[in-house]
Image (cartoon, rainbow, N blue to C red; front, side):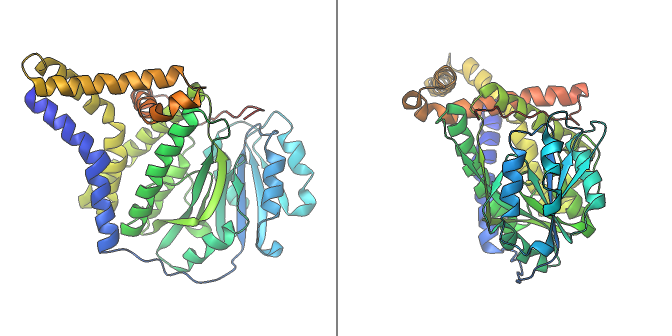
Length: 382
């Protein structure tokens, strides 16, 4: 039990402290600079939507007002067989550079993207969600990095907005701030291993169609790296989106993403090997695979410290600290609407939620569940 305890604790410390320290050091010791240049290539702005009648008009208007030459940008809304007024709203803007590409049968987000890219004329394809609002200079911040021929994808910075001051929102903000730092360092050291699906751009010539159940914004970085192209982070290209305020919706979303990512990692398991893919493989192994295996290490630490606590005050102290941490997460869950109570509890609450989602996501991956479809999780008040 002693060995199990220290192996699990070492794994936890490695994932959350040691690996970030290593990637930070590499990003400063030998950064891979991006050779930027001002240019205005034709850009296709691709918005994927399924039943987004509450958001799509605001999104189109936001896109039409971006700071970029009108004759250099086309806007495509890829509708995955929407059954509400989404398509009708999009058609209102057909005289303003907006095209509707509709799938008559629902095949999922990734299939809708694949289909729309076939019709795109832009040299750069910028992928967006229907609920995300962009700052006006987004395209001008994204495009210069494509002057570097080693760059295949540029990801922008997602800024979450939590108007309801909820525990889920605060937890997502803390998690995302940590993730954004890692992405910055990974981009500078080697390449991103994934992007945020609401803001990333890809060379049209390098885009590879993906299988329907792929987590496209994660898989794209691996597919491009296979072509010798890196994915980079551009923090000055900013978009804003509201966080979830409902823990069940956040949990469902994370389960879906994790199950998809496990499937993508399995299909591309050769890329996890650093001997095959170098530093990129090291990033995949440390940032994704070990992170999603965290529940194993947490359970091993709790179980082993519990068994060792009967004969050691040190392990008893470890056990008590863990109990207090999980108790804080439990209280955070049941006080979700009280900002004064939840503020110090949001990190343990969201940490536990994310790791429970990893367990369920892994189970669904093993069971063979596939997530080609996605559901709109925003409500009219969110």
